[in-house]
Length: 472
Image (cartoon, rainbow, N blue to C red; front, top):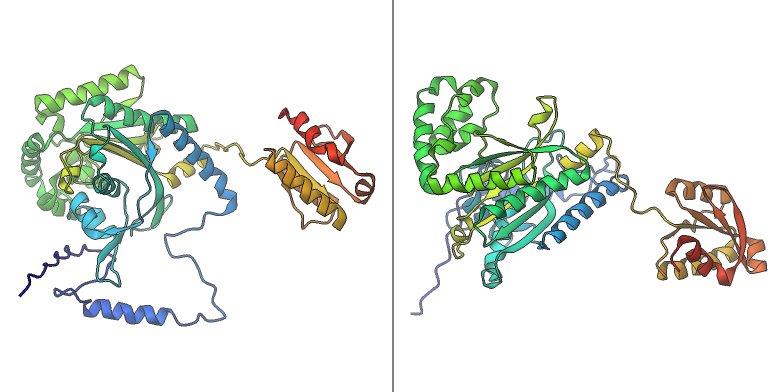
């Protein structure tokens, strides 16, 4: 009898908003009930009801797009300058990827992942973060054989099932960078510098909070000491901290409960338990930051939320005199030297960061930093009547093809309405064609700032406009 290939076991289902699966691989009763519910949901909507976006999801309307273009342009500009290339990964991944990388006890895996069983019986998850998929892609595509370091960036939506609040959505977007194949402190510094410059050049003042989690050896010594300290305070800590004490002691330092703060302040610091190599690595990173005049705070309580971090961890914090505002994290990252090997690749040092785009936009608005409108046209074409509209269409295409940033609204009939649009868009010139201009074979060019107008032959309009714009 031929050997049968044994199907790999499906990873344990994380807690949170996901579907169950029976031990034999078939959907459980819970999954079947979900299917019934899904079928019910497909019934036609009442004519009285209007579909709404899901809780924690939002539309990015046209008036918001200038912020997104502005931020992406800055991200692209900086990553190009520092030699990063873009990598796009799928939104949907195997659930096991995030369970293995983030850790079973992490809040993301336990509470926040959108996980479900697909029609093929696979346990899949909408990606909650960007690093693990980038690591998977690095391994899958054999990038270890490329000249190292391999430097890549990503931009796209992430999904976390958490309570929607100001600046926090269930679908949010991240910009991040990852560097593979370089263990030197200078690479940590470059990643931190890139995050700092990103905000600085957007006009947002920040400070870097930095710490070291050491290697697995010195971190284990510290965790034992931290565990002993918190066990003596068990009756004084919150329920979440009691749970973390048993499962993941380092996350005790991430507690935000007011009652736990005095206990956290007196907890032992991990920097006191670093071995010489890890201590030297941290000192070198800080020296580079000093040389580059990047403001930073050595924060002994900074641990981040994933199990994969080693040595350097950091967060980008808002630089503000208001203590509450100064605690606003705008992104973060660090080094994760064991993750590539942990996911099946060769041992490969790595580091990176992730930044929430929605939070960047909130800060731009809060600080009244208005992005320059990159879609401001040079020319607006206004027309009156069908014959003029046809001529304007042809002129519009000639201008656009020759590199002139032109705009028009061919469905508008009234000249006044078209000139109002030209003003709103901030066009430098408006080209006007009416019945008289069609008969005479001319156009009227109006300087929108001075109000001066001149008549130009239609056939010469393109060259005259380019001359005025300095594009000849």
